[in-house]
Length: 162
Image (cartoon, rainbow, N blue to C red; front, side, top):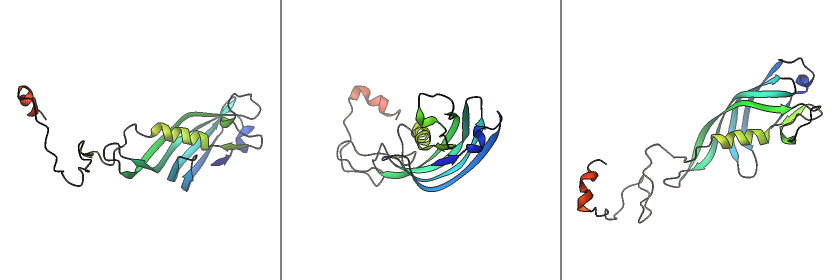
């Protein structure tokens, strides 16, 4: 995704420009494909950079950590304090820089923000029962024929707490 911000490069400090996003099937690298990206980004001219702020809504394919089924994961990524260095300012990172012709290549920044918002343990649904630890049966689709583990009689009173 590229954005033309050439009008902000020489603008007075504090000048803002809003970009609305509504893109279908966005690839942010070899391993991150989004079903869509919707939202808005506000670029603000600062002293040495452009500040990008906004909110993006997207859906990507994920895998449930309990039952291992694929499911669409809806995410909302908040962009805060994302800065892009202006062309005449020296910067260590060329990925977060406005090009000499006034364009921002935002894929690395958007990828980073989306990855930061993916939950550590994505679930297909909050009440996912997962897989049987003995036979591997998906317990969301029905119970299995495995015997329940025998509980030590000294700990049987704790079973009532579950």
